[in-house]
Image (cartoon, rainbow, N blue to C red):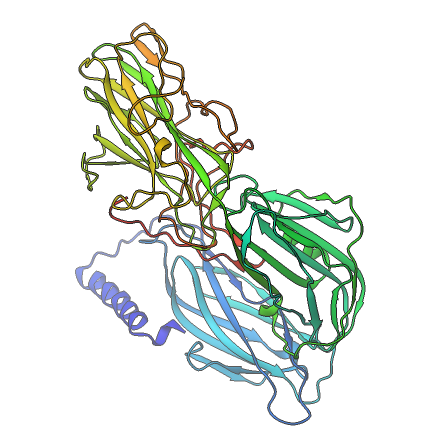
Length: 587
């Protein structure tokens, strides 16, 4: 418990000194102000724990139960509860089922007496804190199927606590997934079987199983099965449809010590948009709680193909009562490319006018790009402001820098802006960045640049992009030619192709985007006009997974930025996708 740590001791001492100081100074008021409502804290821990049966010989295997308390206050400075509190564990409900001992490091200031454990501590700080760690083993004489419960309560002057119940059982199904020997270096169109195999390593029969198949946008199964339901989501990657999840249900009884495999293994294929991709496969006992956890509130629709079936496999895996081996995953690297084509804009106006422009890039495919493991940004859009103008509004994710690309404290009217993408960019994405510029001085044909590049300023090349010539476009104000002209992707740094120009109206112009379409291009114009942000920090990484991206995106695959969007953490089917949020000094 925290009470024995130096920090806890100092907090106790500080509280005592403060009280003594108040008394000495005579500052205690005769009439106290109205008291705020007593804070309420929530106790929690593992809801259900399965124990290995008591062995015929040797020492019983233990499970460690970590019990916590949550202080919901968002005030890090003043939201702590300053006072003593007591936690009680009623162990009478597991008498004859399980034995409890205290973890010496995680449970200081705790004692166990008969069928009760009592812990004392001081101070509950905002967020989740550990109360105690209990080591639990099956009791001698307990039998497979025995169950019981630990009741956890707490008390303190000036605070209330919600109680918690931890259920304990002896022997359960333990479904262990075998890791499959996939080929991970692929070409588009490559197909390979997925002979999912698992074993019930527990002591009891599983009543039905739920198989979860979760894969990223570049992979697909060649058939959608009748006993599976399917859903697509961005999975926190900033691109709609980045992940597909299939939940497949199998009725029947699955016996202890027996391995099972799919009767007809499905096939997974690297599509024309594959690049860096991941596939996760998981098994657990079927039931409403398991399905609800995997669905996570998403909408699912059933498949219409044949029924996926299971059969007994010829051999079992080694026994291991361990829920961490319920799932496996694999990363694929497909030889492919993605053409990021920059586009700029044109606008006209007089001195003092504000004009709206929209710049960015389109992914002409064929690949989608997602840095799944690292969660790092795919690319950076580097925008140089034309002479005679200053930025008065920009997407929140864009950061003002100096003309040389160095750090700039003042974000107002910067000469250059770095705008990161999310950790994924779809094969049909349009990454649109709306800016508002104020024309401070009319400079005929003033031209800035829009460059889509690697996140490292010193190493701008996009390694997956076979067409670097169209990574640069122009942002032009008050062009000499008042008719049509290009503001889209360019060859080198000049203008080329066709596009549309802004039209002047009462001195304020809004330019529109131009770009020539290409393979994988959505073909539409840039998404219109809402400022904001999406994206996560970092830079591209080979073969990485998981992370966060910014807010919502249109279902068309548009990556237009939305104001005030926040990064979302990705959790994949019970397995955490590790995220990286490193911000480099120079992008």
